[in-house]
Image (cartoon, rainbow over all chains, first blue to last red; front, top):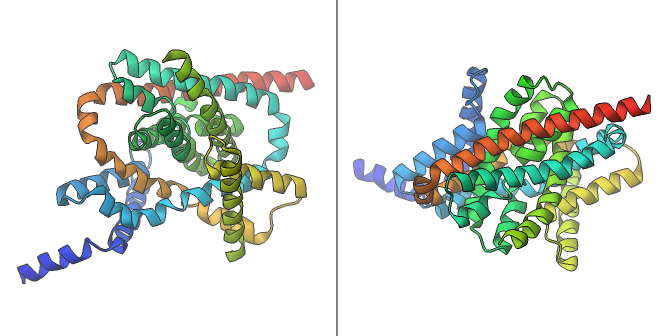
Length: 239
Length: 118
């Protein structure tokens, strides 16, 4: 019987659908847990899911590539989801038009600040040069940040990890920081969350309101463009 | 909803095409989002029911979509073990400082704008 069970595990873990189902299951449970622990700031479904799945892979000795054979079916949907952000943005078009100048000025300064603070703090705390390059575009959405770092000779998969950590930090910490600063305007909260913590911050912003989410999508989209321009320029100036 | 999802994929492919032809340093999805927004603005009316449904059902699960890439962190455990104070410090402090200052700046600028119009 025991041999049979070990055989079953050996079989199941080769199936992509096993890892796909496990990811959905873990995320579902993490969502339930986060809802139950509402008010406890570290209960973020994305963070809890990544932690749980990483521990499972480590303990079972499963290589990431085997996991990703199933995970890629979820990962693939990131691209059409990014395109879909145009819909809530369109619905906020009048509000965006009335705030256009402040939004663009904030974009330029906020994007530069996010890059400078990441590299500056990392450098002060003794990060290696290749880690610093991976930290620089961490406020941009994952595919953009990875593309930038790849072109400059950094480590794209480390960038992906750092970008997602940034997103979780923003999703968990940004509402708290904005509350402390008594910033209540949905447009301002959303734009700051999306600019600094991209899609994960945007997903969190949608929980506050449709308007907060739409402005987060705007901040994320614009900062993807801005970071793609700024990081290569700054790299050439500093390197 | 099927045609809505097809529309999203069509704009994604249009974005990928533009990135390839013009050698843009951007992902196709971000350009696809800009193209879809431009198209909606040019048409000047609410997105159709199919597109609206497809968009809201995929955005409802936005945070799930980051999980598989995030699990990739296990590829870098060794580096994290060596450099975790610097990497974690940079992620935490840079993110929170940037969110706060960005929010304060936008609020100050937008209050100014509104005051200027009155």
